[in-house]
Figure 1 (cartoon, rainbow, N blue to C red):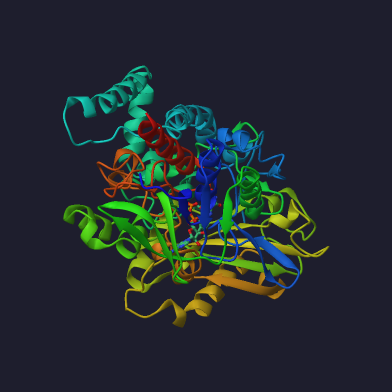
Figure 2 (cartoon, rainbow, N blue to C red):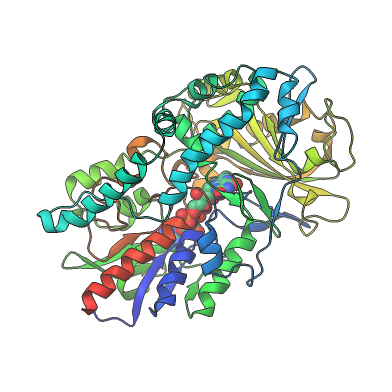
Length: 537
Ligand SMILES: Cc1cc2nc3c(=O)[nH]c(=O)nc-3n(C[C@H](O)[C@H](O)[C@H](O)COP(=O)(O)OP(=O)(O)OC[C@H]3O[C@@H](n4cnc5c(N)ncnc54)[C@H](O)[C@@H]3O)c2cc1C
């Protein structure tokens, strides 16, 4: 390793960059985080988007954040408080009916549509949870990696693979079958195998299209469903909650934890290039032309962004570069934040006074077939004629976000095409599609449109411009079997090390993937520290 005053430069101050910085600094390294935007947090930030109204502008709900990361960084001491929703989900349906999901409620609610489905809920939850437990065990592990060299190099990886095989072997045959289904099938096929009625399949199937530009009947979408249930809120498995102050409260707490250990964070500081000497990363050049040397460089960026824009292509093996250029990125996500003069008054459950359904994840997508149509529309037209909208109104749980008596809502909408099929720019269609999203909510809550005081719109292009999310991909790369675990970001580089010595990746494009988890940052730090320890020996 070269001599340098800085031990590690982290490119990008997203939550994973901050987590990685924290662990490196805790081990005694001198760490500098360079963030392009004026605020750290990446896609997990709270901003004022309309005078007096603040919201989590991109990521909007918390569950996957790893409990060990929360504990190690002592995020509560740095101001983080996470609260549960009063009701998990509320689905207004087309026939004036609705479905509510929440502790102590789901069974009776589902029985209104299908007594048989209600009977099956516990078994479904138990099977899914057993599969999610395996994921929970794996999130903080470095996947077994395909390594070059002889048996000595391969041995630790073989042991890792053996341990994993052993863990899976100990699962019951029924859980192994469930895992096979969840890793290979579509969410639609999986759910059709459990339930008969459309609303409960829609409620569970929604998770399979979140950030996943696919039909719920696309093979592999069952895994995306599973990916959304391995989290917890305050110890309650699978629950989703709200960080008081918005998602920015998480990353501000992380920044404080890192700074308390001496991490230097520079905002408004984009990195243009990774410096290299004799095939090794030795520092970076910023957009302002400053050259900073470091013993190692860690990237929090989408790996495609890192390797196709910041690294000299001549330093990369041909096969690696070809595959990175083809790294599948692009969520079908369109994100809006709206300032509201009053709460939505749903036709199926009237009332503008705050009720439990206002504090839930409100999903407008009554069936898996509706979601499938949304995907096919987006493929051929650029956006769905009837889009899938999840609306959260966090001000019902958190009065710090809006003036008294008024509200903010997050609209998380799918499906739109990451790139429009007719080649036109999203700049030309931003308002048309935003109007469509508002009208979609208005169809179920007819006071909604007139209650909108201000709106912030983020097309896939805006997500890319603002946050560096290539193709608006909320996960830094699709969560397909070909891009998961030992193949994230590529077979042979699942250990957070790339082909360039001294250059590591710590973002959502590495295992275990997207979401506000902190896990990639945690795991990457461990690998960087292993290399520092090896060098010191
Ligand atoms: C619209 C949307 C909704 C989402 N909803 C949820 C949700 O509700 N819950 C959930 O758990 N997850 C959600 N996600 C996913 C989650 O937010 C991301 O997967 C996660 O934030 C990725 O974290 P990261 O730290 O790896 O990367 P990022 O958050 O993407 O951070 C990368 C950082 O690098 C910076 N950067 C980029 N280029 C450069 C450069 N050249 N130089 C310096 N800095 C640079 C960026 O500005 C950014 O700050 C959502 C994401 C989006 C976009």
